[in-house]
Image (spheres, rainbow, N blue to C red):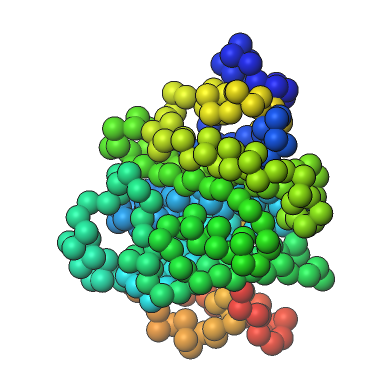
Length: 341
Ligand SMILES: [Zn+2]
């Protein structure tokens, strides 16, 4: 139930996982969000079976995507994309306005093995991974796509590191003049922190009171005093990785533990899930745009197999299926346009 948290209401029947819990610190008006992800992040990471450092990075990125997307008012898809020159070359995560998350990572296995050998096991490290080591020189890009005939919102920032959260804060300060504090955490299934699978979490506070969010930061900045803001930052920073990830610690109990001295009010949580938007239609369009000759070269044992990078689903085409596909192509005339899944 929404309302001011008390010791009695923190243990209520609210869902405890796979959600974003918005809140406001009553005394200062600082707004925030706590994200918790269990099964969806585990599904996304284990379907393709990523190496552990890649999975850890992608888990942190999914938490960041979910918490950022939840601060924006949009009807469509929010996408966060990382590109680098290091062993991890690319990471993409997106979330629909319905809360469906997906993500994938592309990496160079040899470079990755080399860095793993140098740094040792990192998947369960206390500190978030250093993007400057794993991704190297590169950038982080945000897009909000609300469909055809709408303006695409886009933001870009260098991967200045060290952590993903630091990159985001850098972006906020540089391009949006927003003061924020953020913690990101992720842990593998065999962590002592207690999950059955991969888990990820994020805690974000913003110096943006009341309605408006990112749209009108400057009007609201003066309403929260420096002292109140610093206090909110200190309280947020006191939250440990174990607390963020503990499946036995409900979000409301954690928020109460962190902020109860100043009063904390919660709003209805927003559920998160895993969902891919790939489809046979989209795959067929890609094949048509590449042309029959180019596609035939990819045939293995009489089949062309297209695998969705996000959900690892295979789309298989034998000769008969390809004949049908390109016959229809000729009938409708011209090439389909290439598009991402
Ligand atoms: Zn898919």
